[in-house]
Length: 226
Image: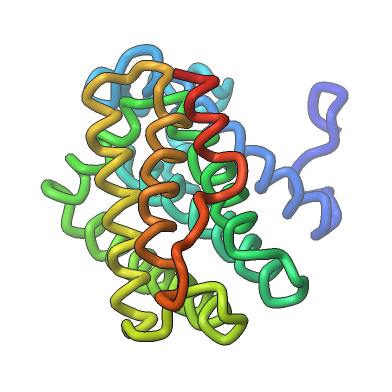
């Protein structure tokens, strides 16, 4: 016991792993909060460790640099996409509903922190290690979205006259471009912008043998929020 607390050496492997995970999450969340309040450039590692109530050296046990917080953020977004695509594999959820779910899940964190999108772009331009990690994530994200398109094509819910990989690429460009433009303003319009973009995208993705209806609920919701 040390000051009434069990030392880390005395903890069971499961408890050590859980404590380590909790510390990493505390650092991660503290960093995101500080990025939102003060901006990425004006937040230091010491600011983050003070907010997370851990020693400064502890930070580097979990993240090689401040920029790697951004990589962890991108990995969190990728995990959300993996979860959504896994649900599509195992259920009969329609592609329009998938788009609505994706819009909500993928904009939860960016919507709270527009400076993150600007910081992500900066990290891609200025940090080789982070850029390399982002490329890996982007490749995995493209694979998942391609699988989503292929599922939609097999079900007859998406047009089949274009390669799935090309459609997935356009999808990613639409989402990233919308997030990037919104980040310049940082207002509360993100959900409307994303839903409008998906509504327009849906018109181009729908099967060619008939005129596609708008994604159910998206136009109505966008009008309501505007």
